[in-house]
Length: 163
Image 1 (spheres, rainbow, N blue to C red):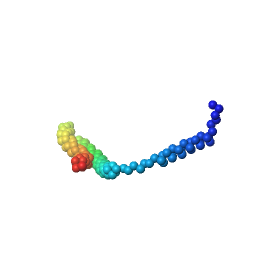
Image 2 (image 1 turned 45 degrees about the vertical axis):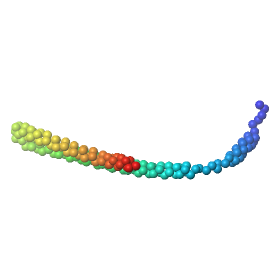
Image 3 (image 1 turned 180 degrees about the vertical axis):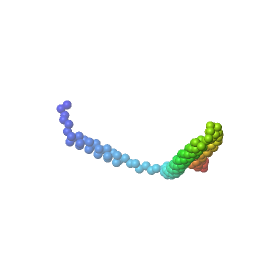
Image 4 (image 1 turned 90 degrees about the horizontal axis):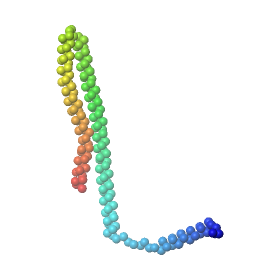
């Protein structure tokens, strides 16, 4: 092992190896022709893929629009629901103030008991009506929120059926 490493000699060997490989590569001929049927198939495949991509992209955009409309409806529904709850609470509070005012003007215990009994009977009816208002509102909110998505799903199935 008396040989010493010579960077100059290593560079020369590497250059010679590269030049030899390059000449061999250049001597290869890649002059094969692609049959017309293969080219036609490739073109048809590319066109079909592009069409499928466009359809998919359009359907995705429509789905996103449907979700946005659904979220908007949900937000508006939540606002309407909160307003309804505040309205009901205000009505109930006003009824309680009216009862308190009536009780303050009562002349005897029998009148107080009658006022409270009448108030409670009336409030049970009011609570039942308020529960109906809330039920109707939540049903409307649910329908408004799901409608854009239902419509989009129906359109997607119709589109798939046509294809």
